[in-house]
Image 1 (tube, helix red, strand yellow):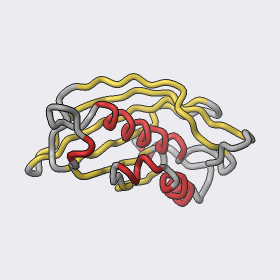
Image 2: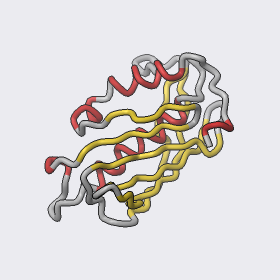
Image 3: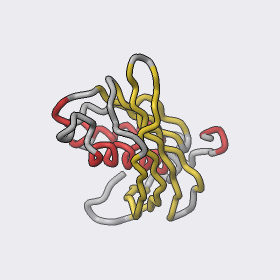
Image 4: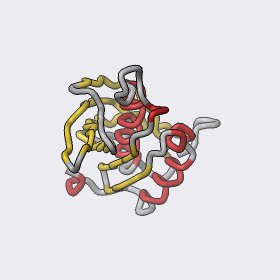
Length: 152
C-alpha cells in the first residue's frame, strides 16, 4: 500500500524517527521502528511481564497505544514538513489475546488528506515464528499547523 503514496517532505523518515524518539511511552514499552515508508510504519516490541494484564496477555491498553502510534506515524509520513500529527478518533477490535514472544503493529494510510487522514492498522502476536492477528484498528489522524507546544 505504501507504494501508492508520495511523501510531500523528502525528509519524512528523519521526521518520523525524531518524533517517535520523543515518545516516552514507546521507550517504556521497548518499542522500536521496523519499517518506515510513505504511508506505512511498522513497530515491534518484545514480550515483557510489565506490559501484561492479569492473565499474562499484553494489556489491551498497550496494544491500542502501539497501534495508535503506528497508524499516527504512517499518516505523519505523508504530511508536510511543518505539520504535526494528532489522533482524532479510532476504533479497535481485539480479535485474540496478545500472547507471544514478540509483537508487531503495522499502520497504513487508507486515504490521505490535507488535514484529515484515515488509517488502518493490524497488531500481530508472534510465537515460535508464527504470526497471529490479535487486533485491528481504523482511525482518523489530523495534521496540526502552527499550534504552540505541538511540534512534529
